[in-house]
Length: 197
Image 1 (tube, rainbow, N blue to C red):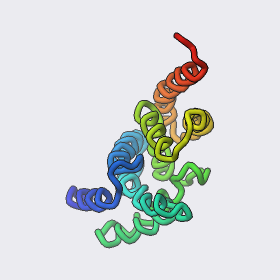
Image 2 (image 1 turned 120 degrees about the horizontal axis):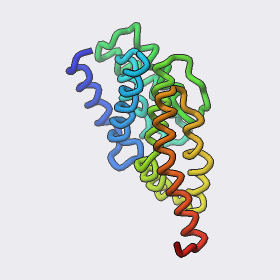
Image 3 (image 1 turned 90 degrees about the horizontal axis):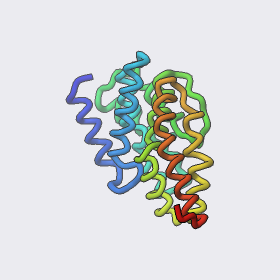
Image 4 (image 1 turned 180 degrees about the vertical axis):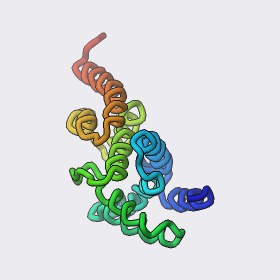
């Protein structure tokens, strides 16, 4: 696909996503960079992968407004329509739709295609490291979570993410990034206990 296509797709996604959300366009851009990095190393279909990454949260604002909506399911439908209108190869649209449908952590699905596996990995990598800490705390504040609830979320989900990576490339990146989160959580718990140093 040419640069004009990708710019058009980016413009559509950026216009759709809310500024100030933990799933805004800057998140999409980071996920896309992770996906490209992994995809180039494992020989994925880069058109499918890039389109999947750019569109994976296209319906996130709908779920934010109505939690009964599954942004992965709805986003897959929206992606199919958007890609068809932009002239994306029909033979590849189904692969993009599948990757978006199964990317969500909460679904607990193990993707069958390499592109869908990479999208899951890329999305999860953005929940780790310094950016992952920022996103978790920001989201916890918006939800009104206590410090204790936030620590619980870090332990029950974020710190376990390396175990759920699909590709070896992502596992290695996750191992490095999770150390930052672990050190932060340990320091936060020390402060909660009232440790002086």
